[in-house]
Amino acid sequence: MELLGEYIGLEGRRQQLRVPCEAPGVTDPFQSLLSGVAQMRELVTELFGSQVQQEAQDRVTAAPDEALDGDDEDDSEDENNTDNRTNSDGPSAKRQKTPS
Image (cartoon, rainbow, N blue to C red; front, side, top):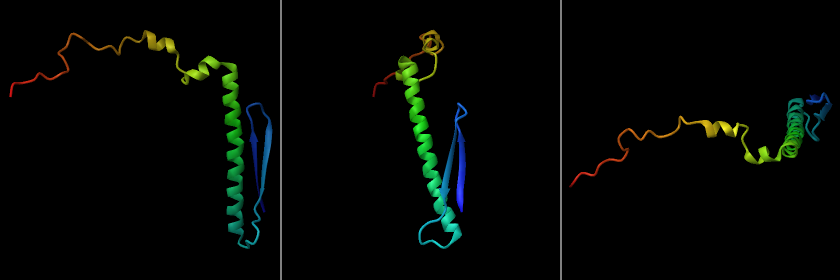
């Protein structure tokens, strides 16, 4: 018994994952299947880990200024936003001290 998986990347590149479900010394087919699932999970984690690292490197190479910033938001929006200013017309937020 074996598990098969196929990953198709954004560019259409196919990568096949194949894991045998035969653990040494295990006669129970469900235990063998569980062993195969654990191995497949490790393969998928490695595959996506390398994909994420490659994508992160591509982003740094493509736009080093934006990659260092860390957010995808337009910084000019922050400069033009005047709604977050405090209103100085109202009373002070501090409590008045009362004599004891």
